[in-house]
Length: 362
Image (cartoon, rainbow, N blue to C red; front, top):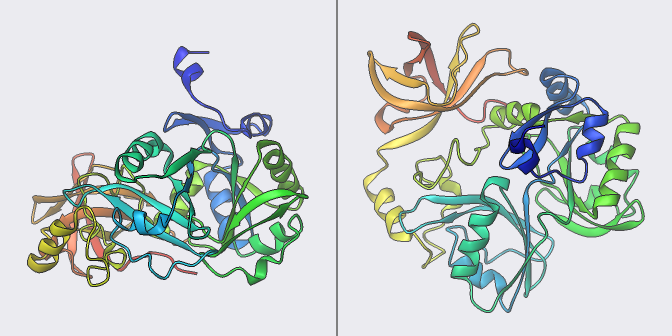
């Protein structure tokens, strides 16, 4: 085995994936399953019944400190004022240029505690950023110490309920609770990255292994990063490092709904967003629909009348819709729904239509 593979981190469920003959890949410094039975089969399981993902690679922080949400408020453009214990908020950390340091979820746990789930690739960067901008706050990093499973699909709640003492049907979307999974302490949040209902479950590693086996026995289909990518793309959910990064602002990325300028008087990068709101953005993230099997991949040029006007950030053949879809940044005046553009694929141009996002909604 190469030294590169030796350097990759492994989740508590790694050997269970290997035992199931999962195809592995390197992702954000971790060795992760890209697929088990096949991407399309896994994708359809989540859309039609229930799939389970090992997402233990994601960053997990517990922040403790007085008025913790008030402190976090200075780092994000989203109003956290109404966030009560048991509620969660998807938002973005911004740099002084208004660019996105990371997108993440804040889980409110009371006045002096908040849990954060951040991207695997940005865990260290986020930790450094938070510690540099928060004062009197203790950050506990659970990233390598907990298993995290995503149980997603129309049958997710009823399947997971068999192993959880508390009533999951009462938990609202973006709600969460601390309860008991297989008789052990666990954290369950009604959040996900697939466009389907479901829960993300954080438990001790051994409980995570037992839960994975129990869910598969109960009919859940094991899913890898491949299906996670096609599912999130159909739901037009951004992937950090591809669709959004340090150089893209939430207004350019179609995340304007996270920006509450009227309610949040002070946060890092605010002046840039105020200016963009006033002048309009020069580029926008759009959804594209292509024809046939012309799949637009990351970094492929987007053209208008033969001239480059943008770039693809993510693209795939949608298993649910049966045609190719993509996200791309293009000049703002060519971002209107119905606009016909072209994508250059291996030296040839193919038509692409700007369509409404998300591509798929349950």
